[in-house]
Amino acid sequence: MVQRVEHTLSKAVLDLSDLEHLLGSQGDDREQVLAKAAEVARAHVGDAVRLRGLIEYSNRCRKNCCYCGIRSGNGKVVRYEIDPEGVLKIAREAWDRGYGSVVLQSGERIDKAFIMTIDRLVREMMSFSGGKIRITLSCGEQDRETYLRWFESGALRYLLRFESSDPDLYHRIHPQDGTHSYAHRIMAIRNLKQIGYLTGSGMMIGLPGQTLSHLAGDLMLLKQLQVDMVGMGPYIEHPDTPLYSLRDHLQSAQQRFRMSVLAIAVLRLHMPHINIAASTALDALDPAGREKALAAGANVLMPNLTPACYRENYFLYKDKPWLIEADELVSKVAAGRRLHWK
Ligand code: 5AD
Ligand code: SF4
Image 1 (tube, rainbow, N blue to C red):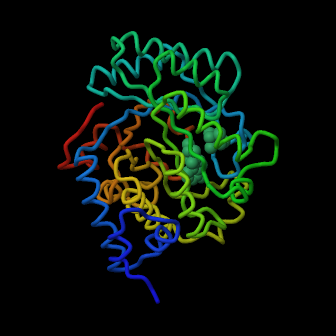
Image 2 (image 1 turned 135 degrees about the vertical axis):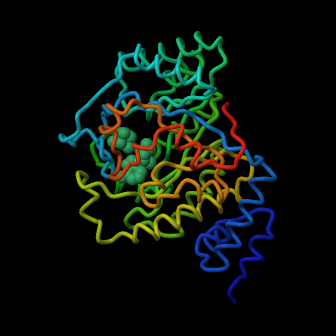
């Protein structure tokens, strides 16, 4: 017998098959899931949208992920690194404009110079804000010692997506070049948690070969890892990447978009208290993408503060809507919502 969506929505705890059932809902059932998620979000995290200013520090990356536009093997990308003074200027201006929370994002590097620069940036941001600015780092997979160093310097949050909870799928979307191991990735997320970071993770939605059962497994893993925040969004094919060759096997852009919004709603039901980002990739597929995500249970928005001259080189996927300026974005996407600048 087919289980009704009302029945699944009434459960206090959702198991793997419940998650799969909700992720597969269509029509009125889907609308019910979205409405329930909005209600649960209001009750558990309130109706405010949390703002985090995003600074894309550098697009240099040592990795060659098969889906990513700034992969090391993409020779078409002009590589940049904003000098530390420039990053601090952006951060200080953001702080002065009211951003109590910033995200410092970069391609992955593990050399000493990189580690020490990030460390210095964290310290100086803490210093100019009297220790008050809340810093999120998104600088890839690092050893425990590095995570600890940055934490002790003042970083509060860290974002590291697991991309897919299915080890086979994980290995299919990453090159076998010795820099990718599913087990290491999960260990890195556990290290972050254990050190004391507010830890964020997530995955891409609509990857070639990804099933509803994989996605349900992703949501189970997020709960198992006890993440505090989630960033997940649609996979968007990029012409200068190996995964582009599988573009004819993808679900349509609209299906990937709809599945991403639904996954946000189902995650809100599964983990009512966490912070869930309305990811930028959503806007690449639908002009009102992030608004729809915020209406379906997401509560975090990351306006891009990277100066326009760098942004065109930070295309992880095509159609990244970088032209929308941060202020404009906030007034458009979070219209009518209370804003939380911390
Ligand atoms: N489509 C969607 N998301 C992507 N990312 C990288 N490449 C793509 C793409 N082609 C996401 C990954 C990574 C984050 C920084 O960006 O999930 O963790
Ligand atoms: Fe580098 Fe991250 Fe892109 Fe992978 S997804 S190539 S680690 S920037």
